[in-house]
Length: 560
Ligand SMILES: CC(C)CCC[C@@H](C)[C@H]1CC[C@H]2[C@@H]3CC=C4C[C@@H](O)CC[C@]4(C)[C@H]3CC[C@]12C
Image (cartoon, rainbow, N blue to C red; front, side, top):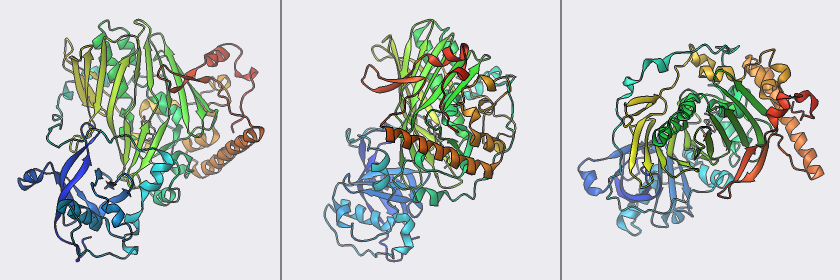
């Protein structure tokens, strides 16, 4: 959508947020030509044709943060974060420009070092109303604070792009690929609804400034699992923890813990068309898996902000985390920044591993071209021993999709093990005594596309068998009526029921507020960890009650 009056080529230096490592900024040479923005390390590289990604600015949503002198361009697939060294943003505040014109102005100013007269043409506001949607200013302050990434200004001389992906996953052993009979259901009662017609754009734009989790959306956008169950899905490859608990070498053990940390992201590959139910405050979900040797309990412990706490135990390990996150909506993409830590202890060695989660980005969130990407660094520490740590990088480099690289480091920082692969395909470690594929996702079940993209494990999540029903507390997700209706394919009834469940929650809140009381979770308690961070720990009561008198004898919340 080039305007005839727009100046042709414009170029200059801007600061660009580093892709690798993810923090800090470096100076890059940008060229805007016929509406396409490209960049190189410097002018010399550009003249030699050494260019990095191309972004079509007519397709991008721009957001400007004047105070931080930041321009963020979101073209759905590509997200550029830039900084300008002059306060030109302020100067051009009053004039409505297209994204393309705006960038022209910025580039020309940086190039000349001072205000150079430009013959730009201000288009009609209506032309570009959508492009002007200033997503960031409002959404960022509402739901998140800016990451502190001001440090580490790079001079642009370091070549830090990582190696190419390796094609070694074909060596994966075949046994990792077989589907086991678990005695659980293998499909859902009804296929998923087509939700491509739902006007997400309107919903999101009408709710600017609100946390996505607070926005009530039509049921056709939901999948019949809730976030407590999604958290349990992270245990799909719990056998890696079992293996770790039988691996004497602490460095190798760490490799298995790392593979487990990565494996939790695999399901995201097929799960971008629907969103999980948001559990109501006090909702619980248990999952007893004799075949996998663990039992899991989770509870929604806070509503604003939403926090889901969970705990799993087996003969080999304990696993717990409280999940919370911040959202950043950039106009086309939504970034999810989880803030809680994941914890695993191993019974045989007394290890206590702790690690962070990476950023998940939903690209093109408003369209059917939606897909998920994870990026950032995971650091795994063993709080009980400093023998080794592990660093996993979810690579964010143009042209290398879903790549992960990791290293196990000894106390002095030497690399003991290296591994890598793709979070949707598998991980290979070539430094083990016999180099091998250490994890590969299970094959997707037949017809998974018409069943919300669920894995077999996800299909089993909301199953309610007659023998299980009387043993569950009434707060268990499996008994949540709207989610059950959706699972059965009754979309309209789901919508109605969902409103009722949400309304009931609001009423409970009002009553508590009136009494000046605070909701107290049943099975988790809030404490501070060693670093002074607020964490939610299992209080031990759930299984005690369930194994003894059962939940019929206790006073339970009435959630629906
Ligand atoms: C509006 C709808 C249709 C768009 C689809 C949104 C979906 C893809 C979003 C909504 C909530 C998101 C989840 C929220 C939190 C986490 C925890 C994080 O550690 C991994 C990603 C994960 C699990 C997200 C995956 C993507 C997700 C499921």
